[in-house]
Image (cartoon, rainbow, N blue to C red):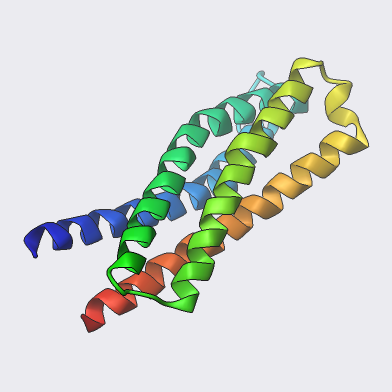
Length: 159
């Protein structure tokens, strides 16, 4: 019984930390990196190089995202097997899984490969569409993490 409490608590911590990281990266880090002209004196990082920096940040964050995707699958599958079935949990868990994998294994590598082609490649419509899709996916991930966290917390309080 105690082990279950620690596993549940660690799961909630991972979900909350990941949600926090998604919010911080999207709402704090990206605007600062892309608007260095308003913060620095005599140092201007152009949009392409700011993108390189953000790309590296997201590349490193992708390792955490992979971990979270695996953790969610294992935890939710075990909970499902123990009879803790819920449509909201299932939907949020699947959304976390797929949005995590899309972000970490599709969008980030594609953006990095286009950045490697040079600044011209990042000014194309294709790059813009991929970038917009990755932003939407990141927002979907944030919402799914929040829903999964809240619903799991609600169900744990009942039990």
